[in-house]
Image 1: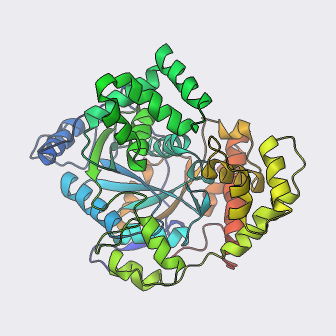
Image 2 (image 1 turned 180 degrees about the vertical axis):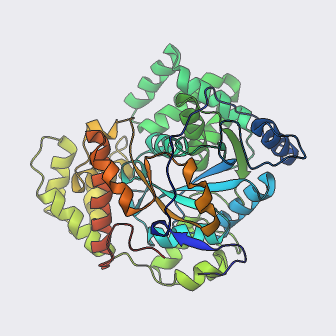
Length: 448
């Protein structure tokens, strides 16, 4: 990887830092980081840490260094991600530690990551992050609500996380997001009535929820619907909802995307969406214009064999013996079609989206039940990669963030749900090893 001047890195097993329990602050502190927000951030750092402007910005009330979270997938890591990290660093200063919570072997589009999680984690650290913690498989492959809740829950286990920096699409301020969040959390009778009406009309749940939310804004409903039509903005709202539900004192920082949006396929150097870059990779074309040089040098070959993944998914469907009506249809489709795309497309309906069906298929492959999907208690995460000098901050991590293989013994002594979620991570890693033809172990001993 690239040799940045101050990026002396270590893999997770190179550390022996002690874990300590994380105290969570009550009440959400959400402020507008709109025009002129650089100064707002600087004063916010000072006021939250209880320091004067001339004092250190690296400590916060309650202990621990000041930290900013970023929730990500980096599939693959590209110039837009580097811009986001640099902008966050510019706003908060060098003393604030940036913690990435990143999807592991599988990502939210319910697919294997194009590149190994440790490659992606190291790319983030090379680009300026201080450490990367893995978002467990159960949350990484879930819808926006569960994805966001799980990721924010990981951040809540780290002392000193005072900001969450995320990308948004279009001209939007946190005040607008807050109003939308209030509508969705309040769930008024009118909101629930409209939601039911849109669902009956055949809209997917996400589309129905967006329209029910927009309807609460009267003459401004079209603008709100436009906000809700952007994937990054939906995630942004779910982050704020999770912060409020968990009672955290975390301030959002909004960074406007520099490309055409999350799903855009436009290729205009130096920026392109991850979707567009994945298209180049699948077609065997160069993507070096859209990624930092250290990424282009190391992400030179996609490792996933999607034909193997399709075959494994098809076999899981053919073995299905349950009562789920959709899975029964998928089983019949698997008897006709060989590729997963054709199987899913043949079952897809207007209110049963492609992604939701694919999520059901993956749940069958990895034994994910409805009960565990709704679980909101404790679970374990793994440290994937970090700067060498971050080791002195590992004491700010709760025991639910595993730093080395020695920490895995804590899993067996925890709740059965937490054990089940951790076993899912292991199963997902084994599945990923199969479809990447990689015999590397799934534990901590295969790190950079």
